[in-house]
Image 1: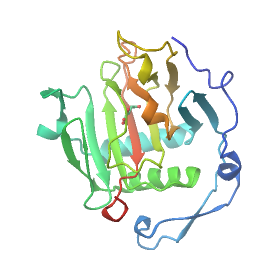
Image 2: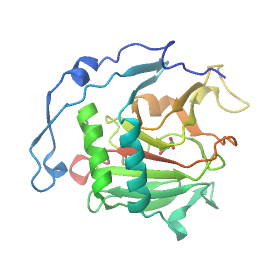
Image 3: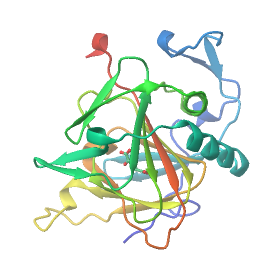
Image 4: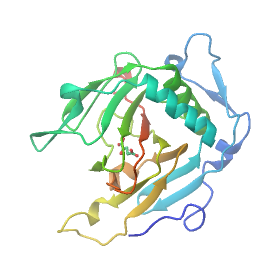
Length: 255
Ligand SMILES: O=C(O)CCC(=O)C(=O)O
Protein backbone atom coordinates (compact mmCIF):
# COMPACT_ATOMS: atom_id res chain seq x y z
CA UNK A 1 0.00 0.00 0.00
CA UNK A 2 1.23 3.44 -0.93
CA UNK A 3 2.19 5.61 2.03
CA UNK A 4 2.17 9.30 1.38
CA UNK A 5 5.39 10.81 2.64
CA UNK A 6 4.28 14.16 3.90
CA UNK A 7 7.77 15.51 4.15
CA UNK A 8 8.85 14.49 0.67
CA UNK A 9 6.79 12.98 -2.11
CA UNK A 10 3.45 14.52 -3.06
CA UNK A 11 4.34 17.63 -1.16
CA UNK A 12 3.61 20.95 -2.73
CA UNK A 13 2.29 24.17 -1.33
CA UNK A 14 -1.47 24.40 -1.12
CA UNK A 15 -3.32 26.55 -3.62
CA UNK A 16 -4.66 28.58 -0.74
CA UNK A 17 -1.23 29.03 0.81
CA UNK A 18 -1.08 32.72 0.14
CA UNK A 19 -4.33 33.20 2.02
CA UNK A 20 -3.49 30.89 4.88
CA UNK A 21 0.10 32.07 5.35
CA UNK A 22 -0.65 35.74 5.22
CA UNK A 23 -0.15 36.98 8.76
CA UNK A 24 -2.92 39.01 10.37
CA UNK A 25 -5.30 38.51 7.45
CA UNK A 26 -8.84 39.41 8.50
CA UNK A 27 -11.51 36.74 8.47
CA UNK A 28 -15.13 37.69 8.76
CA UNK A 29 -16.91 35.34 11.14
CA UNK A 30 -20.57 34.63 10.52
CA UNK A 31 -23.00 36.33 12.89
CA UNK A 32 -24.01 33.10 14.59
CA UNK A 33 -20.37 32.02 15.06
CA UNK A 34 -19.66 34.79 17.51
CA UNK A 35 -19.79 34.31 21.22
CA UNK A 36 -20.44 37.13 23.62
CA UNK A 37 -17.60 39.62 23.82
CA UNK A 38 -15.79 38.17 20.80
CA UNK A 39 -14.59 40.49 18.02
CA UNK A 40 -16.40 40.35 14.70
CA UNK A 41 -13.16 39.59 12.92
CA UNK A 42 -10.63 36.89 13.66
CA UNK A 43 -7.01 37.04 12.54
CA UNK A 44 -4.47 34.62 11.11
CA UNK A 45 -1.94 34.97 13.87
CA UNK A 46 0.04 31.76 13.27
CA UNK A 47 0.91 31.10 9.63
CA UNK A 48 1.33 27.34 9.35
CA UNK A 49 3.15 25.38 6.65
CA UNK A 50 0.55 23.38 4.75
CA UNK A 51 1.30 20.28 2.77
CA UNK A 52 -0.87 19.40 -0.21
CA UNK A 53 -2.01 15.82 -0.78
CA UNK A 54 -3.58 15.20 -4.16
CA UNK A 55 -4.77 12.33 -6.31
CA UNK A 56 -7.56 12.00 -8.88
CA UNK A 57 -10.59 13.63 -7.23
CA UNK A 58 -8.72 13.90 -3.91
CA UNK A 59 -7.70 17.27 -2.52
CA UNK A 60 -6.40 17.50 1.07
CA UNK A 61 -4.22 19.84 3.07
CA UNK A 62 -2.26 18.73 6.12
CA UNK A 63 -0.51 20.80 8.79
CA UNK A 64 0.62 20.68 12.39
CA UNK A 65 -1.80 23.07 14.04
CA UNK A 66 -0.76 22.72 17.69
CA UNK A 67 2.66 22.37 19.34
CA UNK A 68 3.27 19.20 21.33
CA UNK A 69 2.73 20.98 24.65
CA UNK A 70 -0.50 22.62 23.51
CA UNK A 71 -1.77 19.36 22.03
CA UNK A 72 -0.99 17.55 25.34
CA UNK A 73 -2.98 20.17 27.27
CA UNK A 74 -5.92 20.06 24.84
CA UNK A 75 -6.03 16.25 25.06
CA UNK A 76 -6.17 16.41 28.87
CA UNK A 77 -8.87 19.07 28.85
CA UNK A 78 -11.01 17.11 26.40
CA UNK A 79 -10.67 14.02 28.59
CA UNK A 80 -12.29 16.04 31.37
CA UNK A 81 -14.93 17.88 29.35
CA UNK A 82 -16.30 15.59 26.65
CA UNK A 83 -19.25 13.39 27.51
CA UNK A 84 -19.51 10.44 25.12
CA UNK A 85 -22.76 8.89 23.89
CA UNK A 86 -24.30 5.84 25.49
CA UNK A 87 -27.35 3.75 24.66
CA UNK A 88 -28.92 4.03 21.19
CA UNK A 89 -26.65 6.94 20.26
CA UNK A 90 -23.60 4.69 20.76
CA UNK A 91 -24.76 2.31 18.00
CA UNK A 92 -24.82 2.32 14.21
CA UNK A 93 -27.15 0.68 11.71
CA UNK A 94 -25.57 -1.01 8.71
CA UNK A 95 -27.92 -2.67 6.19
CA UNK A 96 -30.65 -2.71 8.84
CA UNK A 97 -28.50 -4.40 11.53
CA UNK A 98 -27.58 -2.55 14.72
CA UNK A 99 -23.98 -2.69 15.97
CA UNK A 100 -22.03 -1.20 18.88
CA UNK A 101 -19.44 1.20 17.52
CA UNK A 102 -15.80 0.15 18.06
CA UNK A 103 -14.85 3.49 19.70
CA UNK A 104 -16.60 6.25 21.69
CA UNK A 105 -18.44 9.14 20.02
CA UNK A 106 -19.81 12.54 20.95
CA UNK A 107 -21.40 15.40 19.00
CA UNK A 108 -21.18 19.10 19.88
CA UNK A 109 -22.21 22.23 18.02
CA UNK A 110 -24.57 25.15 17.66
CA UNK A 111 -27.91 24.98 19.44
CA UNK A 112 -30.59 22.90 17.75
CA UNK A 113 -28.35 21.17 15.20
CA UNK A 114 -28.71 17.46 14.54
CA UNK A 115 -26.74 15.17 12.27
CA UNK A 116 -27.87 11.77 11.03
CA UNK A 117 -25.34 9.20 9.87
CA UNK A 118 -25.16 5.41 9.87
CA UNK A 119 -28.88 5.36 10.59
CA UNK A 120 -28.68 7.22 13.91
CA UNK A 121 -29.69 10.85 14.56
CA UNK A 122 -27.41 12.76 16.89
CA UNK A 123 -28.06 16.12 18.57
CA UNK A 124 -25.34 18.68 19.23
CA UNK A 125 -24.38 19.30 22.87
CA UNK A 126 -23.37 22.95 23.53
CA UNK A 127 -19.74 23.82 22.71
CA UNK A 128 -17.36 23.40 25.67
CA UNK A 129 -14.61 26.01 26.18
CA UNK A 130 -11.91 23.68 24.80
CA UNK A 131 -13.97 22.71 21.75
CA UNK A 132 -14.69 26.37 21.05
CA UNK A 133 -10.96 27.13 21.33
CA UNK A 134 -10.01 24.35 18.90
CA UNK A 135 -12.83 25.32 16.49
CA UNK A 136 -11.63 28.92 16.47
CA UNK A 137 -8.01 27.84 15.87
CA UNK A 138 -9.20 25.82 12.86
CA UNK A 139 -11.21 28.78 11.57
CA UNK A 140 -8.19 31.06 11.90
CA UNK A 141 -6.02 28.59 10.02
CA UNK A 142 -8.50 27.91 7.21
CA UNK A 143 -10.82 30.92 6.88
CA UNK A 144 -13.75 28.48 7.09
CA UNK A 145 -16.49 28.47 9.72
CA UNK A 146 -17.90 25.33 11.36
CA UNK A 147 -21.08 24.77 13.37
CA UNK A 148 -20.70 21.13 14.40
CA UNK A 149 -18.04 18.68 15.55
CA UNK A 150 -18.08 14.89 15.64
CA UNK A 151 -15.66 13.51 18.24
CA UNK A 152 -14.28 9.98 18.09
CA UNK A 153 -12.23 8.54 20.95
CA UNK A 154 -10.14 5.45 20.26
CA UNK A 155 -8.95 3.84 23.52
CA UNK A 156 -6.14 2.04 21.66
CA UNK A 157 -5.32 0.53 18.26
CA UNK A 158 -8.15 -2.03 18.51
CA UNK A 159 -10.69 0.78 18.25
CA UNK A 160 -11.18 1.78 14.65
CA UNK A 161 -13.49 3.24 11.99
CA UNK A 162 -14.60 1.44 8.83
CA UNK A 163 -14.57 2.80 5.28
CA UNK A 164 -17.11 5.53 4.66
CA UNK A 165 -17.58 8.94 3.05
CA UNK A 166 -18.67 12.09 4.83
CA UNK A 167 -21.28 12.92 2.21
CA UNK A 168 -24.53 13.26 4.17
CA UNK A 169 -26.99 15.60 2.51
CA UNK A 170 -27.24 17.88 5.54
CA UNK A 171 -23.55 18.83 5.23
CA UNK A 172 -22.62 21.98 3.34
CA UNK A 173 -20.77 20.27 0.48
CA UNK A 174 -18.74 23.40 -0.33
CA UNK A 175 -17.08 23.32 3.11
CA UNK A 176 -14.04 21.13 3.83
CA UNK A 177 -14.19 18.62 6.69
CA UNK A 178 -11.49 19.68 9.15
CA UNK A 179 -10.05 16.77 11.12
CA UNK A 180 -7.97 17.51 14.24
CA UNK A 181 -6.06 14.63 15.84
CA UNK A 182 -4.79 14.48 19.43
CA UNK A 183 -3.02 11.59 21.14
CA UNK A 184 -1.63 8.44 19.51
CA UNK A 185 -0.60 8.76 15.87
CA UNK A 186 -2.81 6.57 13.65
CA UNK A 187 -2.83 5.51 10.01
CA UNK A 188 -5.63 6.96 7.90
CA UNK A 189 -6.47 5.38 4.55
CA UNK A 190 -8.30 6.80 1.53
CA UNK A 191 -9.68 4.40 -1.09
CA UNK A 192 -11.17 5.54 -4.41
CA UNK A 193 -14.79 4.48 -4.89
CA UNK A 194 -14.00 2.78 -8.23
CA UNK A 195 -11.29 0.58 -6.70
CA UNK A 196 -13.28 -0.92 -3.82
CA UNK A 197 -14.42 -4.51 -3.47
CA UNK A 198 -13.95 -7.61 -5.63
CA UNK A 199 -15.81 -6.13 -8.60
CA UNK A 200 -13.64 -3.03 -8.68
CA UNK A 201 -13.72 -1.22 -12.00
CA UNK A 202 -10.27 0.33 -11.78
CA UNK A 203 -6.95 -0.14 -10.01
CA UNK A 204 -6.23 3.05 -8.11
CA UNK A 205 -3.64 3.04 -5.34
CA UNK A 206 -5.01 3.86 -1.88
CA UNK A 207 -3.59 6.98 -0.26
CA UNK A 208 -2.30 6.37 3.25
CA UNK A 209 -1.33 9.06 5.77
CA UNK A 210 -0.26 9.11 9.38
CA UNK A 211 -2.27 11.59 11.45
CA UNK A 212 -0.08 12.83 14.27
CA UNK A 213 -0.65 14.54 17.65
CA UNK A 214 -1.78 18.15 17.08
CA UNK A 215 -2.36 17.77 13.34
CA UNK A 216 -5.09 19.15 11.10
CA UNK A 217 -6.21 17.38 7.92
CA UNK A 218 -8.52 19.29 5.60
CA UNK A 219 -10.61 17.14 3.29
CA UNK A 220 -11.62 19.59 0.57
CA UNK A 221 -14.38 19.03 -1.95
CA UNK A 222 -14.68 16.86 -4.00
CA UNK A 223 -12.65 14.37 -1.90
CA UNK A 224 -15.69 12.94 -0.10
CA UNK A 225 -17.50 12.32 -3.40
CA UNK A 226 -14.80 10.08 -4.88
CA UNK A 227 -12.84 8.70 -1.92
CA UNK A 228 -13.82 6.61 1.10
CA UNK A 229 -11.70 6.90 4.23
CA UNK A 230 -11.05 4.66 7.23
CA UNK A 231 -8.99 4.36 10.39
CA UNK A 232 -7.84 0.72 10.44
CA UNK A 233 -7.03 -1.44 13.49
CA UNK A 234 -3.39 -1.07 14.54
CA UNK A 235 -2.56 -3.58 17.30
CA UNK A 236 0.78 -1.96 18.10
CA UNK A 237 -0.97 1.26 19.23
CA UNK A 238 -1.57 1.04 22.98
CA UNK A 239 -2.49 4.62 23.87
CA UNK A 240 -5.68 6.62 23.22
CA UNK A 241 -6.45 9.10 20.49
CA UNK A 242 -9.16 11.72 20.11
CA UNK A 243 -10.23 12.90 16.66
CA UNK A 244 -12.45 15.89 16.04
CA UNK A 245 -14.06 16.43 12.63
CA UNK A 246 -15.41 19.97 12.31
CA UNK A 247 -18.23 20.25 9.82
CA UNK A 248 -20.69 22.82 8.51
CA UNK A 249 -24.23 21.59 8.66
CA UNK A 250 -26.68 23.45 6.41
CA UNK A 251 -29.12 25.43 8.44
CA UNK A 252 -32.75 25.75 7.22
CA UNK A 253 -32.15 29.00 5.36
CA UNK A 254 -29.37 27.38 3.29
CA UNK A 255 -31.05 24.03 2.54
O1 LIG B 1 -10.55 9.31 13.56
C1 LIG B 1 -10.37 9.64 12.40
O2 LIG B 1 -9.36 10.19 12.01
C2 LIG B 1 -11.46 9.33 11.40
C3 LIG B 1 -12.69 10.13 11.65
C4 LIG B 1 -13.66 10.01 10.52
O3 LIG B 1 -13.45 9.31 9.57
C5 LIG B 1 -14.90 10.76 10.57
O4 LIG B 1 -15.18 11.44 11.58
O5 LIG B 1 -15.65 10.71 9.57
